[in-house]
Length: 407
Image (cartoon, rainbow, N blue to C red; front, side, top):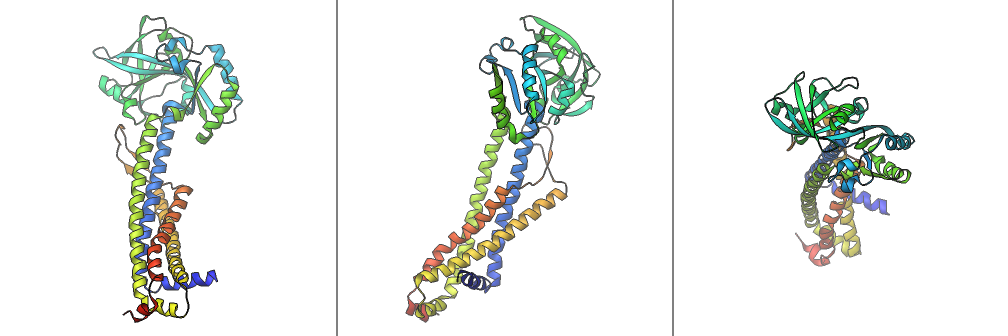
């Protein structure tokens, strides 16, 4: 019985092919827009997340207990000793999801080219291990840091441009040591680096960890950066480390990536507004189609009522037509949306100019998730059924004699 009703509804939908095609076009356009924009936003979120993780943050950072609460006031009082690092790394080696980890030491001071002094944020790193962790940092010119090279630094692109230094030049770093004194050392610029974020490029320098320790007059480190095989496993590994390690502070990447969360909030708001506009367009388009169908079939409705068809059955008949229209539109919208996403991917993506706060553009791919696809399908079908309610009620309320006499 239900199947017969749906077949009958399908035939009614096809009665006016031109109007149905125009309605489907509106539904398909809206659905494709949601899938394409949703896929763009998902790819942007992924790119921002991985850039933050694989240039500065890692998936999890491990500090001495008390560093997060008090490190900003007294960073030298909450450092990890070599014995403590060995104990932590033994635990990290037992975690299957941990692919690598590296030591880091923060260095803050002034960098000089002999004629100008500029504030910098530096890091002492282990070059061999950082190659995997900092994979999104690119070498603009010169060479990368190597473990066997001493007294060399990589300088951020913006900072190098401000100081007018290039690979092979000598710079002087002036810092406040672990004991409160001043220390200055000369370094050779090995390379110019960038991760595409202006705030990073304008201030950062990197050097070998042993050089940073000598510059700061210490043997301890500030933190361990942990890289995982799968970003989605961060909460699980974070919980495991919390249970396995004592006297440490742990920070997952999502507690440190402020810029990522800000962008995600903005994009989510824009996407919600876009979906709201599309919903209104689809609802009005389908409602107009269904109202036209009702007005064209008033006499037919009157004859059906005279033959004993109930008001409820008349209403269900038009709701079924809305459901069929929504199902066809949903399938076509999803198919066209996925086809567009595939076409952009095959073409190599779309180049986007540098966004605010970035120094380089990037290629955008469309990667719609199953959630976006299913949401689009449900949205189109839901809008179609909802849009059919008012026309269905209007059709069911026609007086029998008045409907039969209607011209």
